[in-house]
Length: 331
Ligand SMILES: Cc1cc2nc3c(=O)[nH]c(=O)nc-3n(C[C@H](O)[C@H](O)[C@H](O)COP(=O)(O)OP(=O)(O)OC[C@H]3O[C@@H](n4cnc5c(N)ncnc54)[C@H](O)[C@@H]3O)c2cc1C
Image (tube, rainbow, N blue to C red):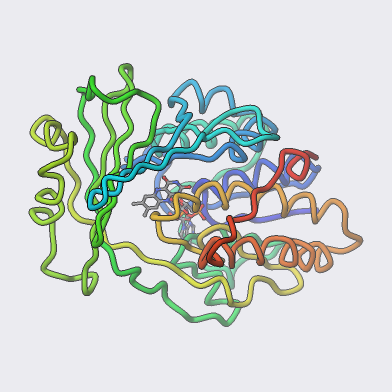
């Protein structure tokens, strides 16, 4: 079988690796250059590490990043604190915090090692692709989604976010812990590690993606928090508008399928988008392997992943987002 993957972001690269594992010949196209400077970072959940281990890159991703073992949230109005571990029962590793460019670099190096033909600097029109399987992993503004007849654009999630990174860490806060400070109109977060420095953000409600609310307001919201001490020594991003896409559209035809943000973009507030894309990759490959036809495989993938995506997008109050166990992710 020959597959083409459009997009070598985290989802597409993992899909190409997972499909190669089951014996599919894969070609991947990526619009940006291999050397493109990708900014920002992600915190991957425990299930992502399980998948990355299977794809032969888990150890290297964890070596480039650092473990996040706990999340602590402080309500800045009531002062109440809530804390939970970032380990999950069936998975070996906790969450991993990693620069996005490092994650992509490790995945793309692996693509070459396992013989995936990778074409960087190639923006592809899905209409021009002929393959037994076409995987649209081309992000929230996916052309592949449009080609399937779903012309929706992602919608503004009502918030702007500003990121900062400093070489210094906050000595008074434990490292490897994701700290959140919530307030009625936003949240700030921090994770520090002596070897990697401090990663922080300030996210706040905004009326529109072009709203006047900008960096000064988001930085002002940090005033009474420990993060305020880091702002001066930090590289601070411009405010980024956050978007989401309800996972209710067409996900597949007989030979074309969407994964990751192309199918179900959640706001980064959920902290799940990259992990979901990584999980999609392995569920897709398994469904293809275990089904009599590609179409049946794509139907099985949709049946398994859509309820999880729906629940991640708008969690049912009182119900936790269903966790994927290590057994479900094994070949
Ligand atoms: C500010 C921010 C912070 C986030 N933080 C987290 C976090 O902490 N944890 C987490 O789990 N998630 C986080 N997310 C979400 C996460 O980044 C996304 O869910 C994840 O990147 C989705 O991966 P993807 O591969 O589906 O899409 P993308 O990462 O968007 O990759 C799509 C790729 O397709 C390429 N492409 C697009 N069109 C074409 C074409 N026609 N031809 C060829 N290539 C094409 C693009 O260049 C891109 O490389 C964050 C998102 C944002 C915006």
